[in-house]
Length: 355
Ligand code: MF3
Ligand code: CO
Ligand code: CO
Image 1 (cartoon, rainbow, N blue to C red):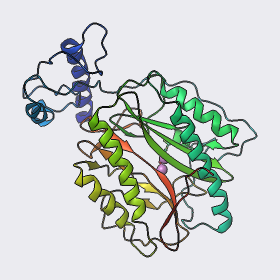
Image 2 (image 1 turned 135 degrees about the vertical axis):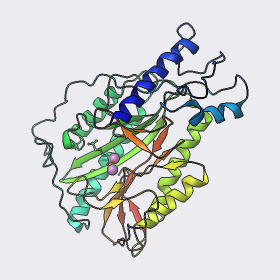
Image 3 (image 1 turned 45 degrees about the horizontal axis):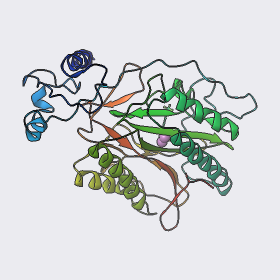
């Protein structure tokens, strides 16, 4: 704990330094910079705000880029203000944890035909809300506004936004910007040109949950960021392609990790896909890296999510003081895509698609 506090101080120091070194008039620190940034000493904190020593972080990359050619600085993300809790109309049925914050943990991973029918509706609703909310992504919109758009659309469809008060989560969707891996809390920060933002939408409808997410580009994103997002999208496809009854669950992570590694990217290990149905997260875990202990076989009728989080740098994560926001340990970006899928007799069916 002490170690992570110290890292946080370094990160703030880094922000301060950046302002001094690169801020030109009112030009945003995160935009492309026409000025040459002076470089930190080898043992000084890296300019990117990771808290790591420069030599352990961006020094090699900056050397390769040549003198005065270091990539433009991106301001580390910091928490904004979280708006008051939104309400759900009293007529809308709620999951078991809506009032208490405490979810049921026991539930089956196999769906009956009736459950599946209802789950298709929840999943189609989640896909629709994700699309509509994604269409509102642009420079200047706050993640709180995106939360409101999703919240209102979910209620209009007669659903409950599954994240709301799940283990105390304060908002209706997760919004994860740049170095945030997952579980970002929507707040007052306006999206900036060049940001990546993952919107993660889960809907409780007809007694079932449907869960999906996608990463969106805000304004002009650099080529490396676009490539990260594309490879993350492909990693979800690779994971879905590995779904087959009779095969062990570890095949999913094996396929994802192989694709990420091929592109020089990391795969987050602390957060997994999960069984989903009448409960938001069942005990079934779907690792996105190769984990030989996940030997359980896939069976037709199983429903779970696949939601790989793919990183530019290290796969290691840490948690903000809010207890939710998971960020990369090195401050580099992460991208994620998620679908809820059904194991069929021959492979996988994606449930989170619009009807
Ligand atoms: N939707 C996320 C997932 O993919 C979970 C969010 S948990 C919450 O599993 F509490 F943050 F909502
Ligand atoms: Co999700
Ligand atoms: Co999920």
